[in-house]
Image (cartoon, rainbow, N blue to C red; front, side, top):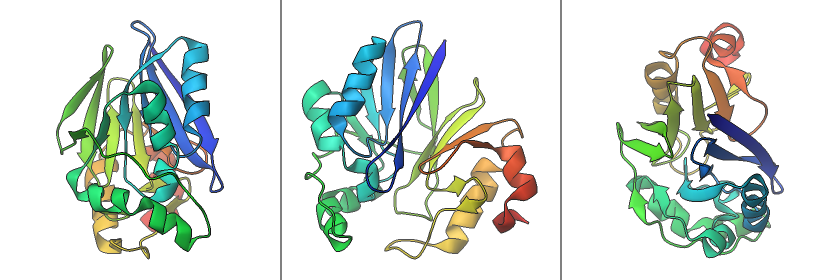
Length: 209
C-alpha cells in the first residue's frame, strides 16, 4: 500500500522522496531538492498523481527543484511558517555557494506540530523538529514505521548547526524528544545519505552516546 522512492539530486546529492499510496496512486513529493522535471517524470512513469509538495525545511538544496515541479504539477506546497523567510532567500543562499536555483514560488499551506496530512489513504503526522534550520519539520508514518526527518538525524551523524538559525542544543533536544521515542525498527529517511533506523542510531551514532 505504501511505496517510497528515494532520488538523490543536485550538486549536494540531497534526497528527494516520492511517497505514494499504491491503493489510490496519490503521492507526495518530500523536499524537491533539484531538477523538478525529473521528479515529475519519475512520478508519472509510476502512474502517480502528485497531490502534495512537502518541505522539511527550506535550505536551498532542499528546494532547488521546487519552482520547476510546481510549474508542472501545480500541487500545493506545504511549509512551516518559520521556514518562509529562508525559502524567500533560497536563491541568495545558493549564490553564496556558487550555485543557482530558480526563485521558489510561495508556499500554499502551513504546517504545524501535531497536524495530520492525508496522502491517499496514508496518514502523515507532522513533527516540529527545529535546530538544524528554523521551521524544520519531520513527517512520520507510524503505521508503517517510517519517518522523513530532513536534516535532523543521519546515519552516524546529525544535522549541522553552524548555518544561520542553527541551534545545537535545540537540535539534540528534538532528536531526543521527537525521534528517539520511536520504536527501534523505525526507518529514518534523511535528507542526505542512506536510510538508517532509530535502533541503529541509538546504539552507534556518536552524537547520541
